[in-house]
Image: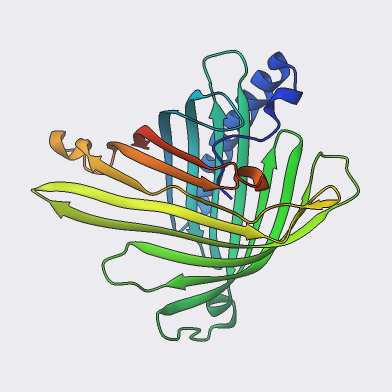
Length: 263
């Protein structure tokens, strides 16, 4: 679940949160550099976002996201970290690491059927302040016309309210992500994003509400204007969250201005 805020950022001292966020950001960049050297393909980007109208957190917020994806002989990896208010007091962070193993590549057999081109073992580790979760399930790489990629992952998830908690919450999650590049009026545009739907978890002794978060984006390739296509994109991400953090009735709709620099 690609969150834009950790739900419990207020529980950590500000100086500690600020230091943890920067350490995590540096670690991500170092890991991306190492991973890209062994990968068949890799991409790393930095995103800057700003929005107004967030629920259960600061009403207005700047967010810096460091993101990396790569593919190797037997699968692919994706990881990111969001750093909230990176230049101010009250910095918070949230990150995910999502490796997948290709059953087709491992077995040497064709796993395709219908719109599915491969079947994968999928996992995700979610890491936030006073919150972590482990997800394990099956993934499907989809073959959709004109899409650069599209994925569907089905997970069983367990989560902890803090790093030392013994009790876990069990539930399920469906995740989709996509990238659709196209041209309009001579401009290179990307329609990309993700959607997570999670259900069945408990918050302590009470069940959490089913929650949906999706963040579609429209980005214009302004790097193409100066002969560097794919390096710099600007546009908007619209975050839609129903029952945010599993809190029933807390709904969020936030338009975020976005700049994306691909290294």
